[in-house]
Length: 95
Image (cartoon, rainbow, N blue to C red; front, side, top):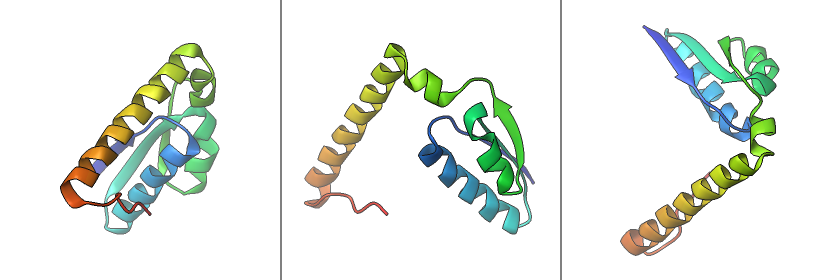
């Protein structure tokens, strides 16, 4: 099966998708991953087929709009943590 993955963000956002793509490839799938231009070398080093997503995530995050977007995501993450605590009585254990 051919699977296309796409991600945008920092290397910390891209790396899990590369790992997921490698796991899928190990199971016999044909994987193509789209990543921002500033992470092409990292993704290509994995041996996966890589397609560039136009633009630099680092440059976008350096803009006022990019910082606003990051803050909105951080707000959602905090809200998810509060919901997790309410449901399970402890912080999520992320690895």
